[in-house]
Length: 269
Image (cartoon, rainbow, N blue to C red):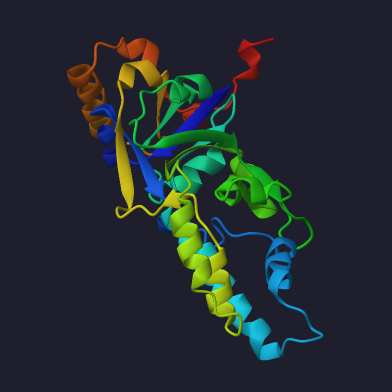
């Protein structure tokens, strides 16, 4: 599967230096990142709330507590986002490059999957699923706490995103830690009930991003130049690639299809 990543020149040079960047989920612009549909959140609240016995104030507290716990998940995962397509996409240039100056690189899912990821992290990969957060729900959310990061709102469907994720798995479930939390439950306080019954299998990341070491030549197949780049900027990029790699520039470096002029139809019929 062919995948693309659109980036500014500085990020490209960092990739050229052998660094594939993974961003912590709470740094993304989309405020819905890692959240769950209405139906899923409602089920979380109703798990603890019984209208026959509990007050509206109790329900309000449940909403606040679950919101806090779900937002905390954004600190548990690092993500590298790519775009699935066989062709260059004008919308991706506009979405990821504010001044439209930069490059788009291509790779494949298999090439990124085979990177030698640091052993202290767990690696997973998924094509993002796009659903209507108002009308649909995530049915597999309970099986893996980071599943919400593999779903986005239907409004983003044009991104056709493929994600590679790193997280720090606790691996061994500590029953002593679980029992200690359960002993602290005060059933008269919703915050005590939820916070002591909810167990995360992943550690938080203290940093906002990770750079995974890669060999540029092994994972990048093509480099497309933004239509907005000047001649001097194209020259600088070309020299940088020559300096850092042994790649055949003619095979790897390509002009954007967007700079082509309209057909001269008289020459093709």
